Amino acid sequence: MAYLDGYVIPVPEAKKEEYRALSEVTAELFLKFGATRVMETWSEDVPHGTATDFYRATLAEEGEAVVFAWVLWPDKPTRDAGWGKLMEAPEMQGRTMPFDGKRMFWGGFEPIVDRGDG
Image (cartoon, rainbow, N blue to C red; front, side):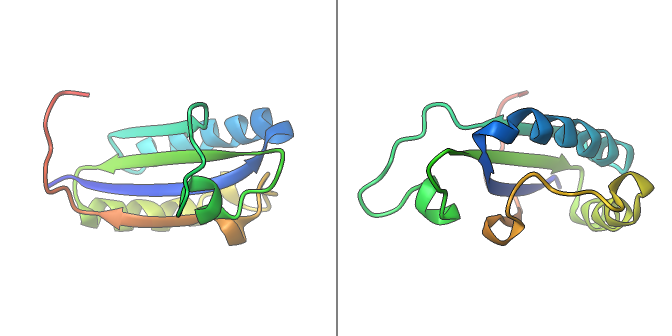
């Protein structure tokens, strides 16, 4: 059964291109290590809520956008192995991240409804 990783990150708007470039590298590695699809998205139509929202969840500051991303895997064992390989990949060593990783959150999810081809 498919398995999905999701993550949300506040990224300074001024570092959008730097983040996009990093995402290109990580997407290629995810695919190389078994993922079937990778999507990184930049906030465009993300409203501020009254109780909670993406901005509050990430403690986004003025001048930061929110990235919502997901990686689709064929199953959890492939995902677990893929993440291990990603963390050890030479392409990821010594990189400076263009965001504050302390405000990033992520998780793995088992699908309970899966419809369509997208």
